[in-house]
Length: 127
Image (tube, rainbow, N blue to C red; front, side):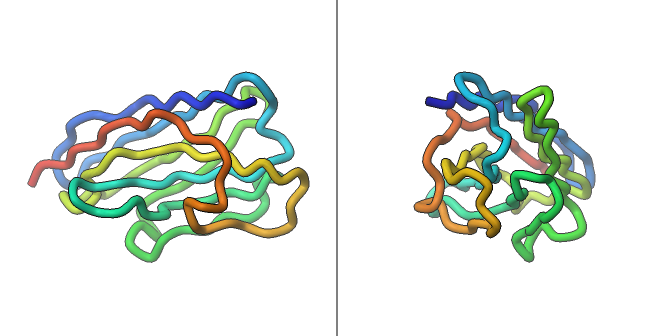
């Protein structure tokens, strides 16, 4: 059973940057896919970014492409989300997610695909 804990959220002005971290414990995140999702008030949880277990393939939602970067450090059992050029519409609770499919060749984009979640970290972008 994997446990995920997100950190790094906070309040930032539009145009600013934040780096979210996801610390995994209980099992190694290698070789499993990982992702970030977010949920704004009154909205459904949405996909933000995902990373292949090898780190060799990445995918982003169109709304964050070119501004956000997902990465992983398998040795440290960590996943990161670097967020630049933040906008008020990026305000949401951000969640780290774990896909319990070993050595999977594909990426996964919906929350139903993922098997474990963190508690979330709040990101608020002021205009």
